[in-house]
Length: 334
Image (tube, rainbow, N blue to C red; front, side):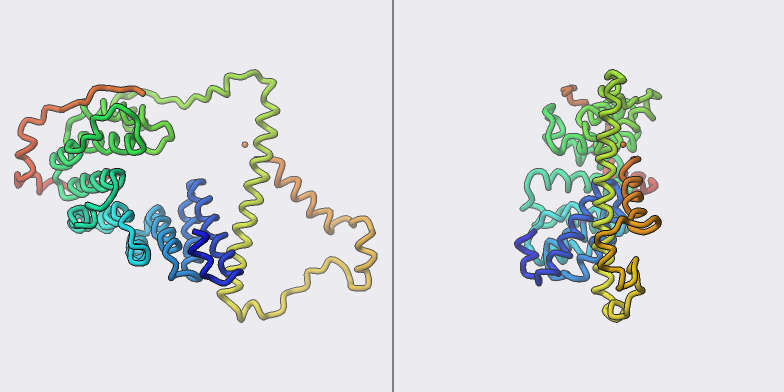
């Protein structure tokens, strides 16, 4: 990313880089709307940089702005020559209500150039597009063709693949098999990437508890947690302040006329008192208050390997061409 941003002037390169970092931080905090604001600013200043258009497209997709995401990812693909964005582009077509175009991307020659992880993601999107078209059984069969579905060893795609298969089974009416596969997805999904636990609980009526082992420690360790929480809160406050400064700086660059207007005086003392202010104690209500506010801001906030289940679908393989499958209502993958 830094190599591509070096083509920009120094100050502008720093500004765009700060917004991209802030966008990544916002995604980590599960705030795609805030991330979207940062990437929009970065795109205004560096629309011809491939990594910027890629970031803008991914964030717009996460924020649900599918048309904007598709436009940015197409531009990034032209600039970089990479086909890695195809799965997200196909899912954007689904989000825009065009599952047929999603399937066209799945069948495109460019899809053959994807690595294994990319092709698995594209197959998951294809399964969802089949469900959008009312082809529930075809959606199940699409995923059954992947040999990775039978792999008991955890891989980066294992949780998403098992969840997509379980979701397709449930949508096709195979509740018992879906329950087993939601359980498998839950075992793979250590980071909570999917909703497997919630879906399993819905089907079984079980109560899923999130228990932290750290909570079993002695009460004497509570102070340590409080200190760590205060430090984290201070760090988050500093990061938010940096993000706000980046947005403010971008606004100044985007509105030069407003920036040229004289700012309101904010000096705490008269010019004649400037020398005395450097050595004197802070008076009440002036800079000392700022220090107290900072202190207040920093004070508060803290493999299983189940066998592959092959449901007995009967005539599933023939159902895909059945006209009745076309009459079923469309359902979202999620």
